[in-house]
Image 1: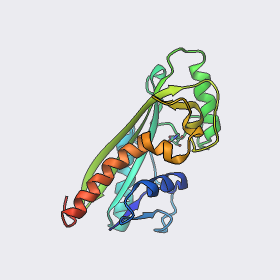
Image 2: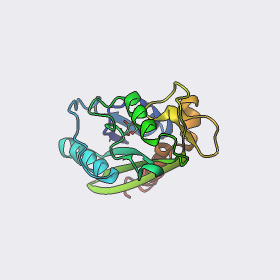
Image 3: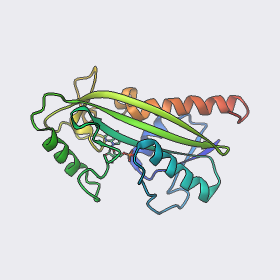
Length: 198
Ligand code: IMP
């Protein structure tokens, strides 16, 4: 079974390859020679994930999925949310994004936040959405060098280390993306069992 993951983020592709069944061949945008930056202009994660999946489906006609993730911070009314990548500007600078987040939170005692991933799948011209959430806390200073994005300042509930202090395997046990992809994986396995029918 072949499916395109509409992403060029090597971190994510590595994460997903380590989660998804090895009988499913995951193709990246790079593998498909799709070089353009797909627009992410929708007002929510669902809209962006669907827009990316539809864009690649239009070009290739193949089964495809796309994801969009946001960090939703309670005390900031859900920001940065859908703006997570470009929170501090178009350069998508992870470090500048964290600086802005910590500045806006200041000494606020409410550090509650969640990562939320939405996956849009187009399978045989039908659209499906899957969601994964991990709740946690934003800490005041960076800790750890693993991962990417806001990982150095996010401690998932039930853990004492940030995502950036964890090996990928441990992050995958609880992460938003892993939870959403587990739902996608279960769906794809079911499709395989049903002879490629949902
Ligand atoms: P994307 O939609 O997956 O590209 O995510 C948008 C932005 O959210 C990224 O640029 C990161 O800043 C942040 N983000 C997404 N996933 C993670 C994660 O697993 N850890 C930390 N930050 C993340």
